[in-house]
Length: 128
Image 1 (cartoon, rainbow, N blue to C red):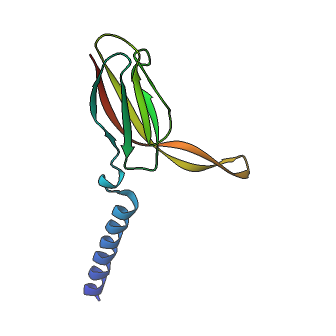
Image 2: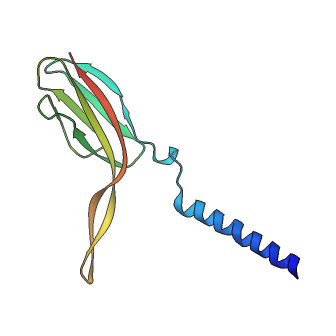
Image 3: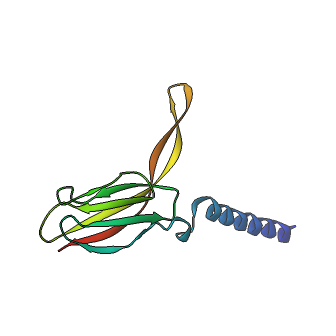
C-alpha cells in the first residue's frame, strides 16, 4: 500500500509540473517580432519601407517625431520619411497588437478593439 501511495504522489507531481509548463510558458520563437530592414541610412527627404513579421498586426511608433514621419501607425508595413536635416538616429518600433472583446458593467459587448500584447521589435534609421 505504501508503494502505491508514493507512486501516486510522484505521478501527481509530474502532472502538476507538466500542467504548469503548458499553461504558463510559451516559446519565444512563436512570438518573435522582426522588422525588415533592421537598419537603414537616409538623408533628408529619403524614404525607407519597413515590414514587420511574426504577428498578425502591428502598432508603429517613432523615437523622435521631429526628424521623421510614418505613412501609417497600424499595419504590417509602413514607409518612413526623413524630414529633418543633419545627422541623428531614429528608432522605429513595431509592437504586436491583437483583437480583444470589450465589456462594460454587467452587459457584454461584441465590439472589437486593438490592444498591445507586448511583443515588439525596433529598427534603427541613421540620418546622414
